[in-house]
Image (cartoon, rainbow, N blue to C red; front, top):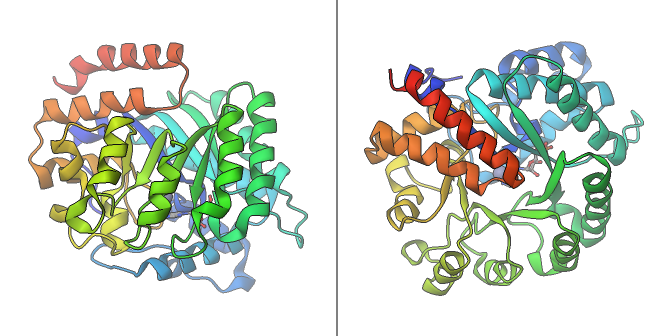
Length: 348
Ligand code: IMP
Ligand code: ZN
């Protein structure tokens, strides 16, 4: 991890809505995984992008392939999910929506259903610890795997939405944005929406996705991941921006991820400023805190120093994120109360 954030940002109660499980594995946990599987000959430099380093988006997706080799058993998924939840809690995250792509690994017997069960089990086990964090789960569809796999994952997510006692709340669409087209995934996403799963879709992560974004915005999604190239200043369009604004769809914004993954040239050019100035709901998130060597407190610190946000503005940003979550209303109300009770100690 890079330089730790200022105490204000650590103590600030936070909501994390965009965190991929396998991208969120810390150095310590990664070392444990590497030591469990020495035959793979994986070094830590292959699973994280350090300070000052950048990678192309394609290289970032290669990193996930390496990490997936290290997390291919039920035991691994349970272990990393618990570790990631504890780390977010230690960073002051009070509500977390974790997302992950159920994977089948024939050589270890891991199935997609057991994968989801392991994440839910990790959430349950963490509830027994004294952690001060509430966790929900979004089942992820990897666009690279095509429409059939997407439909299979949606059915799985629907089953767990019913049987997980409110833990599974939504569906994520992610994966390499340069592979496949959203139109092929539309029936699966529509089905998910019709059954009550909330949709968090990666949208306009690269420049060539204007047509796809128009189509997917028609669903409409409940939240947008990145949305880097939606606005006209970077080749998007007014019509895309209008759609997002009319429907008031919150954006999940991940500064370090976008700069290190080179879809944004520098922090000061991040589209946070465009949307924030419009007064549009923006939620700061980490995306992949392990791969991009960051923490949510650091992302808040970075946004504040780059865009000149006061502590009051930072507080409002973190509290408004509650309303963008997929938590039920009673839980949102509890979280607002929690923010109110924590405020005196954060501003002491
Ligand atoms: P997992 O779903 O827990 O295995 O987390 C890693 C996966 O998340 C990757 O294989 C991608 O499918 C997805 N992912 C992580 N970061 C990004 C991103 O920035 N854009 C699109 N997909 C991503
Ligand atoms: Zn993401």
